[in-house]
Image 1 (cartoon, rainbow, N blue to C red):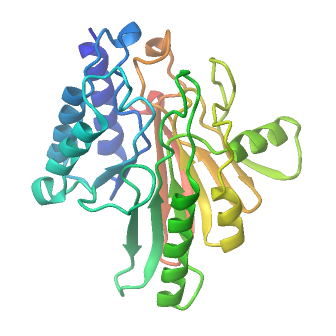
Image 2: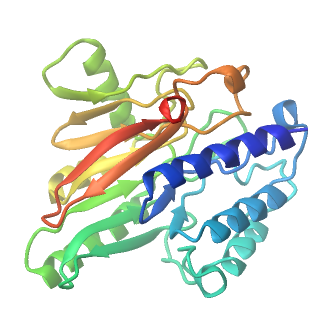
Image 3: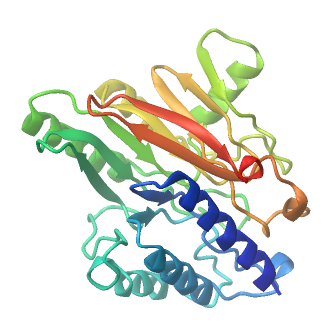
Length: 297
């Protein structure tokens, strides 16, 4: 049973939130791990309801992206069932959960735009949450990617906001699985290339590849570079990775992990566990820092 590990994860989240006092929490996917080999359960619906209730009781606004494990084919709750659960728990009910009742007519689930505005109404940051989807085939590592229609929607929204604000707006992107450019940037960093700028963290993934991205290239990174709006991207997925580097003018950051369950022995590992704190300033500049759970008293 995973009950004790689930309790540890919720306790860790509560500690991170109570110490950092964020205005918004973004969870970058894999809320659950409904695979019997580690969790001894195929139940993905009950723990999702528990987490949504937990966040409702905390009261801080939050949003999330689907991870590849959240709606596994073997899980007892289908994609539609899980969607219905989150719609039922959304803002009208919880007053703090940002889950759109009507979503864009594009590939994926829970694609959304969250606008952060200054007190004078000017746009500070446009936060794009894009679904990296789950799998393309039957293999456990046949990862999907952010599709062309999702990228086109992102581009259209940036252009709309640019026109409205009469400038190139500042934006950030959040998704679950890393883009192929995360792998490119990591390989350049390993070679000590001056094409990347290192900020913090490391890639310590112990399974398969150091960066577990899709074999299918997404147009997202190229489009973001072309538009010049997005200066930071954030992902999850790789449990031991928390590297943050800049590549082609865009900061690529892995969020720290909370996981006590999905990887063999991860319950006893500590340096990868924590959160990532993003502080935005009135002029749309920002700071990113790691908040390791092990350093919290």
